[in-house]
Length: 281
Image (cartoon, rainbow, N blue to C red):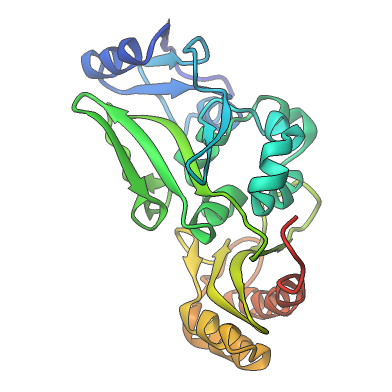
């Protein structure tokens, strides 16, 4: 199937992109296009105009400032995989990146596109939630920052307005006390996960503090397992696994039943709990 007819414009600045969004109805932004083009070809999306933002300077940088790592919206997944800054300062994201689709997709797909598309089975939204991440958004009224907890609203639904452009994501830079874990189950390597888990914590003596368990593939958005977090902070792995019965209620889908997903979520928690014993990276 081919997409419905649409117009095309290439924005050379952020202001131009926002202006085009403001003056054109049913517009979509084009960055990597790895999700958008598929939805166009299947006619799941039929915008009147695509606004290409690849020509906007300054959105493809990775910078550490003031204890935070900022990743521009146009940073490609492949670029992020090669980044020493991400490997050092955001090891959870570094662990997740090889699980995203396939090399050809990662060569074009963007960090900002993955966050903005907000697929509930995608890796990066869960990583952002696990890391106390935040998202920079610019619109007609200027720039604002949205916490990850407030950004993902529902199935493919975010805090982005129709005239907003996601410009960057930001996470606290890892320290010597940082602990991270990541694992997922997929039917085949590169497929969207049936169930996945992105986790972060801080070493506190012989235990853990600020444990954050962000599951993906188990609901309409990435979800934190807060009762399991509390148990894991007390080093009670079995209790944390049992707590998932209250934390998660996955729906059935074409890949697995909700019961099977919950079982896999428990297996992942045990695996990730072992990873929490490792230092950053």
